[in-house]
Length: 157
Image (tube, rainbow, N blue to C red; front, side, top):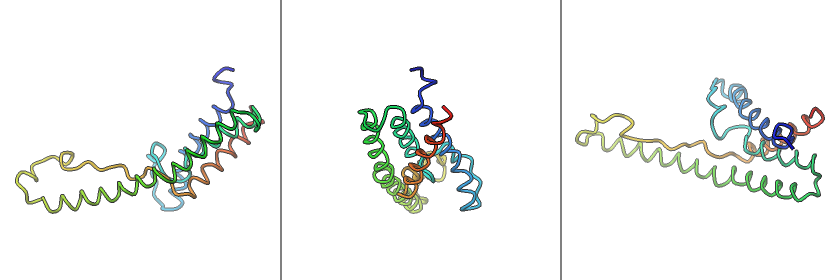
């Protein structure tokens, strides 16, 4: 099987691309903020990780059958990935928010310290990435998007 004719791989990659790009208009509709950089960031609606693994699993199910070992492996991998996206990675993002606030508070108190104001901003602080994981609804719609994309593209393949 050539990499270019590998349906599960194609729909997984297409799902990542579509999920990342669709974050921009969704954010605009909800907040009226146009932010093209969302296409290259983690977090947000829908989860591209969930879309990718759901599309991959659906693609394998369509090509290999849902009774195959490959489908079972992909299914378990998808569940773990989606659980991680809404659990561990989301909590890491929550911790990053708190740590960034602590750093800002600490900087406020040490502004009067010797030579502090002479330092460049990048020397004073380095913020942690806060948008790491997903809310459960983002994971759900990411998974749903991946399944729909795979089912839509399968007859065209």
